[in-house]
Image 1 (tube, rainbow, N blue to C red):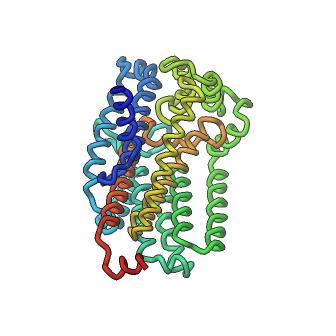
Image 2 (cartoon, one colour):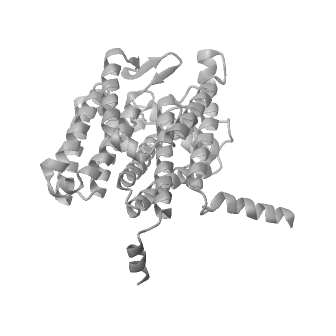
Image 3 (cartoon, rainbow, N blue to C red):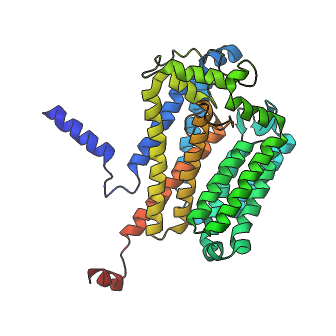
Length: 399
């Protein structure tokens, strides 16, 4: 009887948002669950490559744990920053991102032919991750300030953010990093659509965006090879289709319940980038269909939370927080779809991380900061809803 009561109280505490709590506890548990899953899967997937490169089987696990600790510390600091400060200094943050993107082109660290990292000793900063978040923060403030222009004027309110995006995209394409550009473009379109941009203008700009992406793919032979190998990876299984065929083998071996944690064969130097871009393939092999579904449910629960927080922010007239919450939700959802789709052979490989799971310090820290901002939006909405309303409004509601 006592055990039954204890289980009931535990279930109630974990699943129910207390009226006294000024933060979304479910969002915290979802984020922590994804981070713990990421630590476990990175440990498992990186074991062989870590042993070969450093003679230390847990080298990447320790690094990921340090990144995780840094992410949580940074998020706890960000949580104290009011939304008004993010809105006020959004332009400055965007300028910093542009500066870092220029620095990475001049003095960046090159890996596999791409210059995307600025070395800082034990830590390599990837400015593209900061650029994504800074663009969404800036755009949220812009949509609040220029709401009417976005709805009515094509050149006044619609083109200006596209020019800013074009500047960031140009610097990113010089790295090159087409995947980040596509994520930013899709999220930007989503935010403009939520802001009420005219459908005709929106569709016209979407057509231009799709045409530009296709043109960028056709201009680079290695991107064309990625597309052709994605369409039929078995045509060249030991060449351009090697990574995808190995990933598909991992999915096939996973079956329903998987091979068991740590028992992946593909991570044994067969599948490149097993602990970063293709960690989901190792997860599928070791945890099976059930594990895949549970992890995807966690990620999209976080996305749904972001959307619900955004809607609550609009209802409480926290417009900046509303746009930013929707932007973060679209960002997480689309990046997950691209990463999982690439691992499962549904879209070409783009080199994007799986949110809060893949190995990578910059991605993990920035996405944890994004979750902290969501918690801050929810906190300010709860404070706003608790504020006493003017007497006249209360009387009108009674009538």
